[in-house]
Image (cartoon, rainbow, N blue to C red; front, side, top):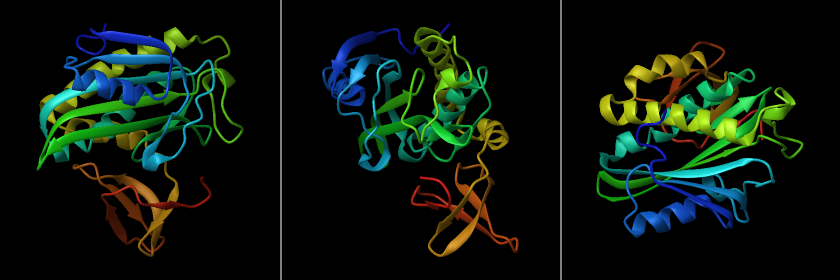
Length: 234
């Protein structure tokens, strides 16, 4: 059972974005762990402002993490969330963590994570973590859970995901990312990407959460931002 995440819950039938609604609640004083879910999103979005197609029957949720916390730690929230979600979804089918904020199933995106933070200087005061999981359906280039688990329900998915996120985010805030790096590396998608002229496969995560690319001749490059051009992946 979740200890802090979802102790304050808000569900709406429709909203533009659960992240936006969660942010509004945060601005109005909502407590740490506030959870927002919606049946339908009309303006869902992913990283970089990309549209997230919010099809009926899927999970759309956002939750509030209150600081203050170091900006460097807040930057790892998507990795900890990805680990928790992977641990949840893998009970229904094999999947991988695509650094820094996606979960893949059968090589296609089944979940996206969007973290939006506010703060000043090197401190983050609040972070809203948005999660979109394709449960019942997905665009043709994406995956959805019922492809591999036809009987899974939306409520089942939400309950398991909230429980694992509760544990992994609390662990990050308490002791940092380092204890999670090994588990993330075991689940890491080993795709090929390039950045600033360097091309290589995803080798591992550094203890600080940076992605390490390894080229064909064994050279490595540490990547700290998500501006990677993935080869053979949209």
